[in-house]
Structure formats: structure tokens, C-alpha cells
Length: 231
Image (cartoon, rainbow, N blue to C red; front, side, top):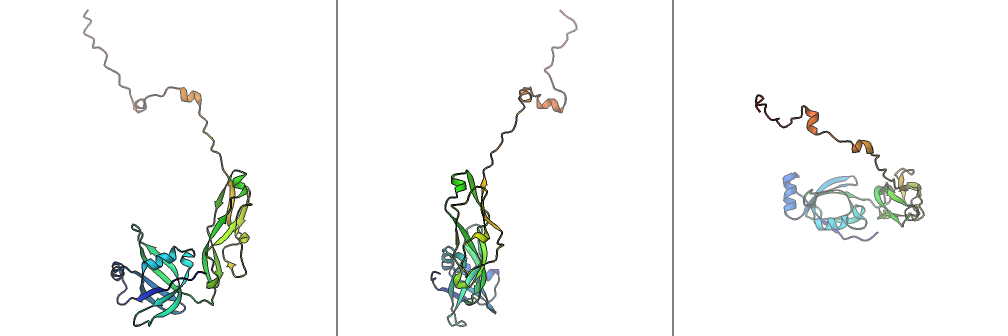
């Protein structure tokens, strides 16, 4: 696992409401909460740039890093932590809030990791099918230090009508899969041809009455008035 930078966190004091969180954001920081490991939860504020770097890294939110809690009450205490939840502002896309969890490196934990498919399947290249990935991530259980950034699966030999299940994914003795072993990860399906609708030529050629005819009497131009038989 790649070594990550130390993330600095400052304990928040006072009331923890929307107004207080807004003031933290105005100051250029992001509000968050640290909990877990049977310890009391702590409200903190962090640098959003550091959190964004972690979320966009290869291991993403599964990254375990050193969280250094500064301030008079914390005395620069460091703890292993992981991002377990985060919220973005819907319009501008800025981070609004994050939840952090203390991690014990000697205890197994459950996380979801992405599944990356490699290669071009035979069923796509030679048989005209398409590759449909049903599961893009699977849940596993392992020690924090053994969490992979992703699970790679080569699909080059996958033919038309064939599938890959969770049981087929590569694994070491350090990983325990929680997702159902029979769940389909990906399969090759055929491309269904669209059938053109049958058109009744006779019906199509028949004249269509004006719409007004369906609504009532059709008005015709006034005929010349009869002037009493004058010649």
C-alpha cells in the first residue's frame, strides 16, 4: 500500500450546527467527524485539498492514512483513519462534509473494492457480442494493510454466452469475499437486431380524411344565391 501524507485535523469547538459548519467552509476548511475504535466521536475541520487528493488517488476512499489531530486538547495525537462517507455541494461540486473512522491495523474489516476488466473478449472480437459488466465492485474482508486498490480480471478468453462470477475472481489467502460467490460480474451478450415494423401498403395508400371530418360537419363554400329565377 502506497504511503500517504499525514492529514492534519483541528478539533472544532462550540456548537456543531449548520451555521458553525458554514463558518468552517467560509474559512476554507471542511467540517468532519472522527469516530470508531470504541472512542468518543470528535468534530474536526480539515484541509479539503488533502481530502480531495485522497479521494482521487488509486485506492480512493479505501486509503488508510495518519490523521494528526492538533490543538491544545489533542496534543498532536496521531491515529490511523479512513474516509467512510463524504458529501459534495450539488451545484459547484465542493466537498461539504466527511466522516472519518479510526482503524485498528490488526483487526479485519469489510470494504468494497472496484473490479477492473482487462483484455478484449473473444466473444466481442470474433463473435459480435458485447461485454456487459454487471458488478463494478465487490465487498471483501481483510486486514487494513491488505486492502487492494482494485481487483483485476482478464476477460480475453470469454466467449459469447459465457460469464464470470465472483467465484472466478483472483484472490489470495488474505482476502475473504463477502459478495455472493455466484453473483455475475460480467458476461458476453449478443446484439439484438431491431426488426423494422411491418407497414400495410394498402392502408398507407388509402386517402385520409381531414381531421375536421372526425369532429362534425364539414363546412363547404357558400353556393351562389338563388335570385328568384331571374334570367
